[in-house]
Length: 320
Picture 1 (tube, rainbow, N blue to C red):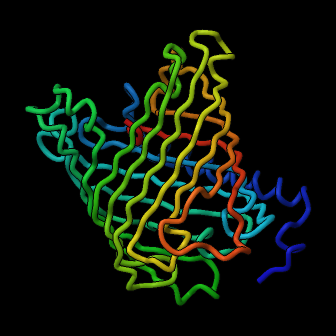
Picture 2: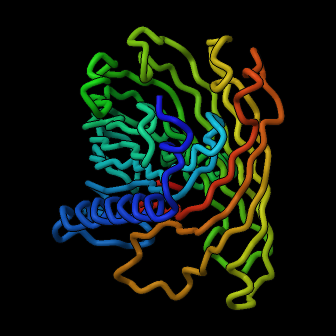
Picture 3: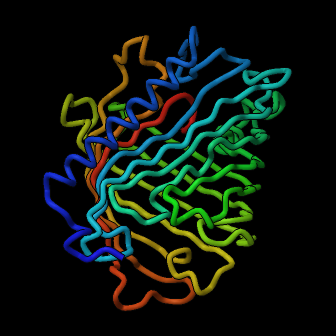
């Protein structure tokens, strides 16, 4: 374990680490787009629609505690991306098929759960049940259309020789829901982002027989002054994050976080045609507090808050 001085480091060191992470994620995104070759973007769909598409979600920023230790002060980058193959009758008529997943996390600190390939790669299958032609134009589909059923197998790699004993494979089966409403649209007075997931997971970062169900949720919602140029892009918001698992002793998996922040989310109304692959993009600063533990409480030494600053963006149809 590092000393508190070693963990904190100098301000210049943290800025340099954050810069390296930003550049790394940017290069990774560029590589994905270049790999698409002659792929095109239309209405937030990236790839050779309706046969092959690319989607991803990326975050680069700073975390003060990570709900782990005071003055954790880490630069953090996360990425999750899919190359999706759509089977007949193809995506625009019924969305189902296999995919290749690449995902990971990097931090300027050395905790294993912050430094790993989480899918290097992974393979899976997915289906959007409410994309059926009989349901596509119904009111139910307009609400539940983003619901995704999936099953996947991931190869994992936790960096460093000291972590060679950690699980190197994982299976996940479940459902996810990613929905973004008016995030980069300055016409409505409100916006919201919703993520919810329920899945079974075979392994985590330290237990190859984790074999647990996970129910996790996140909600961010804010208000803006409509159609007011730059002022419309600056929005205050409230934030909620929740997770619940089978593991009662794991307090970090069973808690409710509440907080809020402010973000800059520019309008995409005049986004150039060559950037239509950009699904959403925000710069944010927020603070979250542990409002409740659903099972066992954390030790008193564990901080009950975190401060986060960063850039988050998604490509393709990650959010719908």
